[in-house]
Image (tube, rainbow, N blue to C red):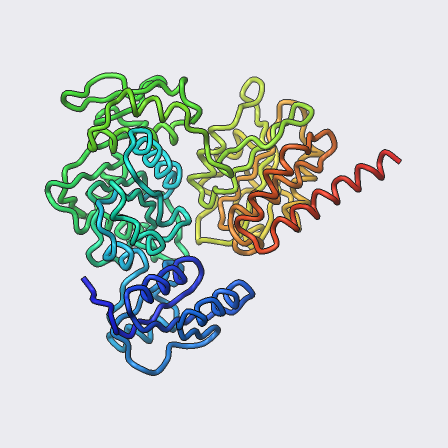
Length: 496
């Protein structure tokens, strides 16, 4: 473990993780520098705050010339960035924000990783722990940096952590008592050389586990790791929606256990608010965590049945004239798009009934892989953002594709074309950072645009939108109000 008092520490990359790391380092007595090669309004505000606390901050610049005892890197900073290369060349000791938070935590943690389903499963696990009156905080990649809560851990029974592959790249001693791997499907191929490198990054969650720890692993993901020669040192529980050989599997809507002294049905999906095989696996993983932590099945089932899907995940925003508008803005890869298309209501006689809105910042995917499913489910695709031309080239053989200059234009065009029984689905299969601040911002623009469509009941969504805009965007509440005021003004003009 790294001693911090009076040590010179450089934080690379600000944002939420970097700021939390700086503040924890200050409380531990370190002398702190921070650098970010970007410069924008939000970073300027963070820099002012940190300078006021004694941090030496450099925006839009390079690593200072002096030597540092330690560098702490934010997960969004790839190893290809010049600032990190400089530190590697200087042989500076480098760890990540997750590792720094872990080294300053004092309770056991349950950590969840995987390509898709991390946030849902993290929330499910935190929910079942709290339902059993166990003290926990959901942190990590879910939006609350571990460094921000590390000093609270003396009051907790467990930390519940969502962990990304980016965070796992820079761990050193990080060790979950229970590690969950949900799945491994293509993602972040703009950062990794290929699927093998990406899978190995995910597998680092097991790197420091001991024989008495637990690994809860999707059966298919376990096979992928074994093919790469990756071994898991801890005790293993498997789960799968497709493979009945798994310790917990899905059979006609029932989650069934084959585990010794825990055999039989655990949960009926028909009694839950979550839908689809992918959510069945999220529930299986949560149940397995609860089993390891000796939480009674009755208590777990009660808390899991009532869990509602989080915003921006196949969220029904509105139904207008028989057309459903579904916000799946959290979809940032092809696997999540695939699952969304299988989850939405199908058309009469199995006919295609989805108008898909997709596109954003490219992550290096081969987009044609989802083509056969598009031909079965999608009546037309409206493509936006940086990848729209690439998507049209990959998908135009499977479904009619239309380029749109904005998400607003795409929603309005899809709504005009959709008929009763159709679905307008925002499931971008790309990250949001070409046009939006994050996936929540993208989802809120979708919600607000839908709320302005003719026939929409715009009362309730407005208040919810103002609340979410205020959470993630500077001046967001004002922006939400402006959008709503514009909607009301348009309506008044039509009445007149």
